[in-house]
Amino acid sequence: MRTRIREGPVASSFSMAGPAYRIETERLVIRCWNPADAAALHRTIGESLEHLKPSMPWAYEEPLTLDQRIERLRGFRAQFDRSEDFIMGIFLPDESRVIGGTGLHTRVGPDAREIGYWIHVDFVRRGLCTESSAALTRVAFEVDGVKRVEIRCAPDNAASAAVAKRLGFRHEATLSKRFKVDEHTFRDQMVWTMFAEEFPASAAARVKAAAFDAAGRKLL
Image (cartoon, rainbow, N blue to C red; front, top):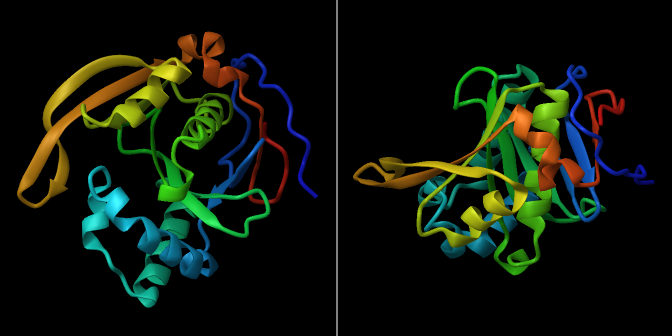
């Protein structure tokens, strides 16, 4: 049975113990990867590979074998458990299908997170990246207690930029040749930013979401 979710509160001045291993929204389950998800993820990436290549540099490493996929998910889970990086899958509510990937990445420095996301080609233009990113923004500020959250995308990635703008992120800068496509190709990168003091008034603060730690205890 799914936990009933509630309207998001204003961000508090303290954070609860995290990280959030599982997040539930109205239409999605977002959780850390397990090696057992490899076959489902394998199928999803295969079905969406050409759709993903323009915006996801890792798509150029595909196709991986199933064994390679298992090893990659083992690595993601290990990083999650060690609080090094928080890479997550996006699932249908009954978890019968992987429909995308996301995460709260630590690569933008201390006291900050970067939200990345991708979605299966059959599920685009349904607001699911907006829904998942709003929930992750809440977790970043209300559970992890960070000071800043960023979303980065190429200037011609209008869909990703629209997600950031819709949630209340500000276009802070466009950096030249910072987005690595492959070993020889770099593209410009937009940086969309939200600071902790801006979060309570944002659309992200109002998303309905519940978050749980590794023991299933409610964080949000």
